[in-house]
Amino acid sequence: MCAEPTPRAELEPFLATLAARDYLSDEEIATLQAASWHFRVFPAGAEIIADHSKPHQSCLLVGGLAARGMTLRNGERQLSAVHILGDFVDLHGLLLRVMDHAVLALTPCRAAFIDHAVLREITNTHPHLGRLLFTLVAIDASIQRNWILSLGRRKAEARLAHLFCELFARLEIVGGVSGDSFAFPISQNTLADILGLSIVHTNRTIQHLRASGLLTWRSGTVTILDHEGLAELAEFDSTYLNLFREER
Amino acid sequence: MCAEPTPRAELEPFLATLAARDYLSDEEIATLQAASWHFRVFPAGAEIIADHSKPHQSCLLVGGLAARGMTLRNGERQLSAVHILGDFVDLHGLLLRVMDHAVLALTPCRAAFIDHAVLREITNTHPHLGRLLFTLVAIDASIQRNWILSLGRRKAEARLAHLFCELFARLEIVGGVSGDSFAFPISQNTLADILGLSIVHTNRTIQHLRASGLLTWRSGTVTILDHEGLAELAEFDSTYLNLFREER
DNA sequence: CGCTAGGTTGAGGTACGTCAAGCTAAGTGG
DNA sequence: CCACTTAGCTTGACGTACCTCAACCTAGCG
Image 1 (cartoon, rainbow over the protein chains, first blue to last red):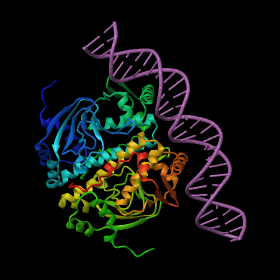
Image 2 (spheres, rainbow over the protein chains, first blue to last red; image 1 turned 30 degrees about the vertical axis):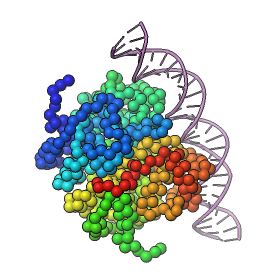
Image 3 (cartoon, each protein chain N blue to C red; image 1 turned 45 degrees about the vertical axis):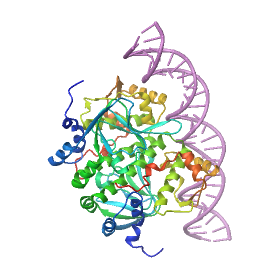
Image 4 (cartoon, protein in one colour; image 1 turned 180 degrees about the vertical axis):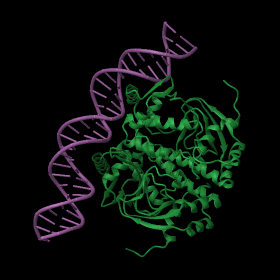
């Protein structure tokens, strides 16, 4: 591969997500960078955090795609969130203590772990930074609310369109897009578990989206050909992503 | 009606939700009770907080049922959360600043408002209490994840069963159940918007649940006849509600 | 060359939606 | 006390979005 990046560089996408929502002081940035991060890699399909476990660390994704997943007894799986680099995947583990879902690596992933004790100390000594971290939890919840709307009321095609609109917007913040394209190297099987659809119907929905000329998806790369048309189809309104800098 | 309850008494359900998850010091309780709460009532159907508004207060529900709702252009509505007394309905508004959904009174509601400035000050001066408040936001997110599983993978009947299991468990904490019954005075139309189903199918699903002897729902009251059977049908696992006292 | 994981296609089934009508109970005005 | 209205519940008939099963196709890989 390439030379081992410095921890400092690996935190950049995370700092970018924060900086997209509020103003970070140099001292706050330094605090985050000075913290003790432990890096680990996971192959595609690996379980990063097990369901019902009681983690003592939280996990920041610095590379790859991950997801939160729950499974019914009959084996059907539903993914409730897709995470990209810069996402503090299980920050809420600090508050919830017991996982009610698993965190899975959808692609090979690189993650940085930080002790809950350190995070708790940050919320004690840096209240604003603490609020900023919890804002990320609230934004995750916001994304989930929108996904509830998708699952409950949007048809398959609009649902998929909305997912791609959202991923593009989120990846843009952290430098995860190049031009109109972003890496999305997952199987249609996995995508079906995100969309709450069967594999077959997922396949047909993708074909329909491709045929309408809104996007392509080849060899693990999605290219959006018509941003406006896609957003129109999805009724995409980015308010819920909180892409504005405000004192929080 | 009855005599005006004291603010102190009206906060009890809220303190109970907190106390179900962590240990509150007397000083923390006093801080919450001493805060300046403004009470308002809303008729059924009223908009408690408007979509896309920028609230400067957060809203604690002290009576009635409320919900978060989003609407598509074609008029279809999806409710993403049902709130009961003691719920800090839009605590996340403190962090998100712009509402990405509306908060609606499903029944006549009584709510207590508190300035964001006060909440922010609490997170500055009482870090543990602040974390506890944000834990409520994280639990809301947890509930939403479970609802994503319901909408994506559970069939109508299990979805409805899960809703009733959850409401019973949550209402139990705040003294909102009597025996096996709780008040649920909403129309099937509204219920359909919670379940992401049509009215007609919602009606048939309810009838099927009733016929299977698991519960009754008459004149605004749900009575669960077979808790175990209902939980079995719903695959209900209360882990996600965080009903355990832990240092957070 | 054969194996495998993933993508694609067709045929038929089911859970759910839509439309339209009739029912019930509560409220309103005469 | 009785029309009349209205909101909500119920039922039937029919339509459709999505599911299931099963086959085949394709590309990568040892």
